[in-house]
Length: 294
Image 1 (cartoon, one colour):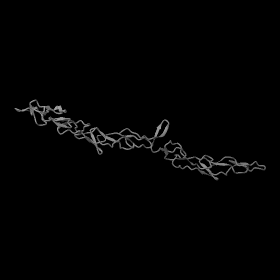
Image 2: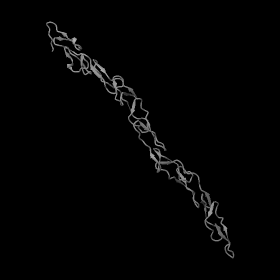
Image 3: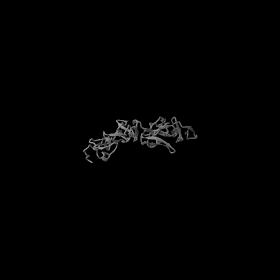
Image 4: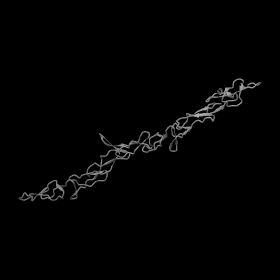
């Protein structure tokens, strides 16, 4: 930072401070040759050399995802913006480095990922996309996975058969409970004469009895066809179909099926009608008559 002045002759001369450096600079060597005020110089830290001046380094913030290099002492160029490097995979930067010279840009996970922290640090984990039957999943945000929530789109007296589809939709598939039939978007209690084991369809008709049969079962809310059909007295058959007992027979019971269930009138008696229900319908043959058809 000095040069030798007054060299030559009888005088040794003296060392004088160099003055050729600009403000905010530091001298790096003495002046040479003798009598030369030309010490080499460099800019102080925080400044950079531009021609014969030391200009203050830029300390403004860079764009999102970048930080600014600090120009070191003696630098001849301004500090440039460089990409931040401390974000995990599947993340995006949302701010520049703060302060300007720190590689510490704030980041968030990309859509479809959330921030997860464990002993190894922070990472971006893919959001979950599955829930149990009857549930749908909230769309996750950058800081937390989406929770599974109960579907609410089904009507009363229904049960869910599938999770939301797509997974984030409150639209779980549903069926009606046993004893209820599906009509439009409601589950309606099955009426007399109908039943439902549950499912996606309406109530079904129970079997139909013959008009000459007694019927029971298949009450309101039946879950299966439990209807019973029993032929009335004077008839025999399955109950779905009831046939009259023929001439010369009677039948006093109910629910009898076989043709032999119709009882023949006793010997010497007869009756000419059908569907008789009592032995008293059999009439004794008159004098001079006999019974036929036995």
